[in-house]
Length: 228
Image 1: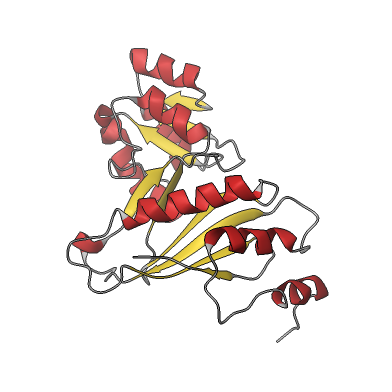
Image 2: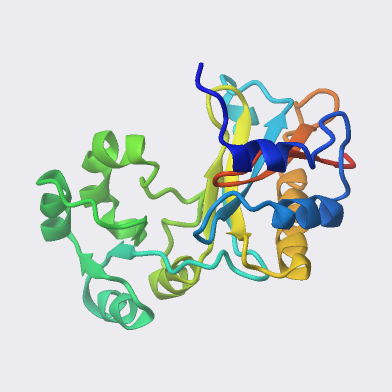
């Protein structure tokens, strides 16, 4: 196994892996790392006490973080008529119906989020095998199937994020950029954790959030203190 780079090892030395850091302190440690020359994305990874095989315990949703994520997302929208005009005005990079579905079937994938009006699901439904594996399939639970497509386009383009548990019951989500201030990053991290805590399924057993880790693109993870 290749050894980690010098910058990564230097960052790792700053982390007490036996500790669970308060959020603000974890952010301060993360911002002290000198692991990359670009503005790294900061992510939260959470292990949940859910059974991902049970549909009533699935965790999926979307949330607008108070300080954004430092990135403008490319949003497309399935809509027609006045709704299509509003989606375009709100910032959708492409708007359509059956024609847009054919483009996606033909290989078009240069977008981050797909929004759909409810009456457009007749076109979107057949795209599940394409958009599903990419994590872009619109769903009401994530707020990407909605009659108010213009508002959804505006929110997601500004950085509203979608998240869902993976096959092992973990959640992974971006919460900002390393260049954010300590205050802004801390506020985003706390906001996301609290949002997920509020989604605890009634059938979940024990502590809902087993662990939470803060990390940057090139840096080591820092375990974060979470009160269930």
